[in-house]
Image (cartoon, rainbow, N blue to C red; front, side):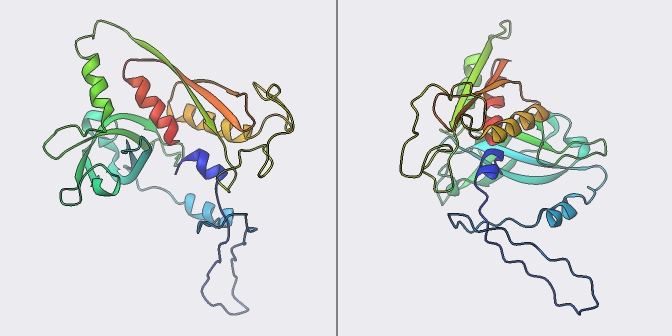
Length: 267
């Protein structure tokens, strides 16, 4: 559900199915989007149909909690659960959860249970609501059922480094660079297919204008989603290569810097 990927890489080619109707019945048809260059099996439905379901009210006193963690490759994974709103107000009241670590290269197949321990709560920008409650994103780290941190749990290593330094306020500012690609998964935005830009580096850094800045709308959408979530995203700009962008997170205090950066990557 990553925002950046979702905006860049929605592939169309959906065939909509509807129950049989008589000519006198009102029918709602799903529009078919144009075929994109790469067929991935993903589909884009008519937004009016999606919006119909997104507008359904949430049950009173229940929230959706998206548990997010870092897998063996350093990428984010997530799964959703329903919680009483009273349990979603603080990390200490959130339940631990589990997942099949053999499917994320974090556990063997014969002993695959991995425990998710909630560490940080953010507002969910993908499922906003207007009833006074917030759905949430939950940054987690990973443990064995016996309580040992997994080898891939670098957050636990960082937490030990901060232990005993409660009298210090350690600030971090982090910069995240990334490149946006077309659906062929090899051509950056603003590049010709199987070629190179016809201009050298120079006009793209901190660029303005559609001939210089590629993917600005995606970066701006990510910026706003991070602000909504409560991430201390402090700025953004185009980088030196066409299709290359960056944003900054911080200043943040202590281990919270890592939690915020990884949640921004998830978004």
